[in-house]
Image (cartoon, rainbow, N blue to C red; front, top):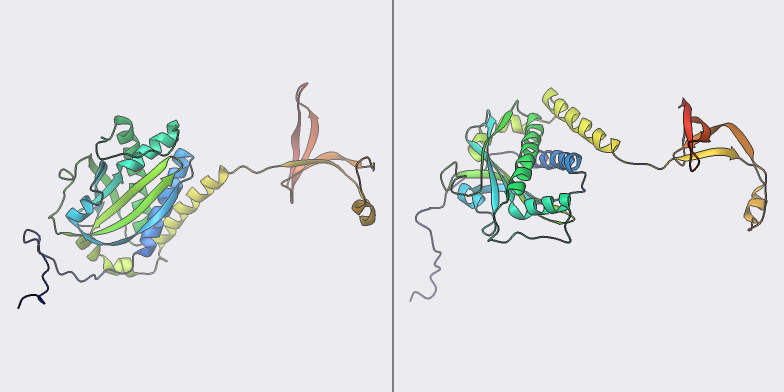
Length: 294
């Protein structure tokens, strides 16, 4: 008589909580956070880092702390004024190992297993990453709130990183960061009730002066990254004019005359960037010195 009864086990020490999500869509906050973090990581490491979205959602506090049941994790307890409660930043040990391997040279992708402890070097690198995460949180939230973000402490064990009741709701933002030597997860968890108190501000269009300040910060970081990009320059010392028919019939051994410029023209392949005097640097190389820059 009981064979059609559906049975669902319940952990009585952690009864299911009924929560109605009253927050607005925080996709823009998520995107700003990890976009700013990626720019900072590139500036600091000069390594290409691929950020793979893991989404954002509400989870219970203890489920957040145990997102990676195997392997070491570096936790940071973060205070974000004026949010109530404490936020948590979590970096998977595999990601720390990959960053260290990528910076100091590794023969191939590395994986931190469950028996691996976070080394002193990985902890130092992790604390640097946490500082960049904190700055990126500031960038992401400042578009809506006047916040002050600071790290209170770091831990390597989930019990010591516990800052709320087991079933307390947290708003988690998840991502995987991939480098050439491997990668791993990074999570930022905000106390849900802390965000809920500011849902009106978080719902406002990102067009306030605080948003503009955040955009200025992002633009400055983006320009800094662009400044590191190398381009190829060409130095044009002369030109020639020939009929198109002759150009089409050119073959090895053909000769035509050119007109030398008084000053060499420096181009990026398309636009002329300036004019320069052409000369010898030493017995083995030549060089130019700019006289006019356009």
